[in-house]
Amino acid sequence: MNTTGVAVVGFGTVGTGVVRLLLEDAPDGYSRRLERTTGRRIVLRHVCDIDLVRSRGVDVPRALLTDQVDRVLADPETTSSSRRSAAPASPSTS
Image (cartoon, rainbow, N blue to C red; front, side, top):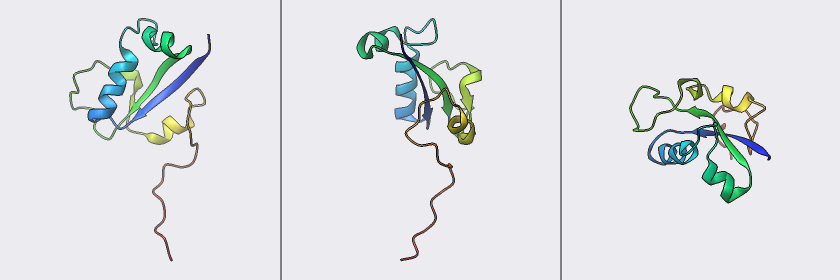
């Protein structure tokens, strides 16, 4: 079975819902429901947010939590549509 590591950047309302979906029915670290639906093991590798203290009503293993987006982007086991720097874009000069 192919495995895809994912990260959630932003742990507000939407991010919390995504994390809840990824962790439900996941005794081995991946959601069996998503595996049946996608044909892949989707493993939550990181949850990144600036506020790691606030309760969101979902139990996330401490090892998955980070406030360092560069750590997420540098993880070769996490699929990303972009590996570029997390620095803000420069303002347009035109």
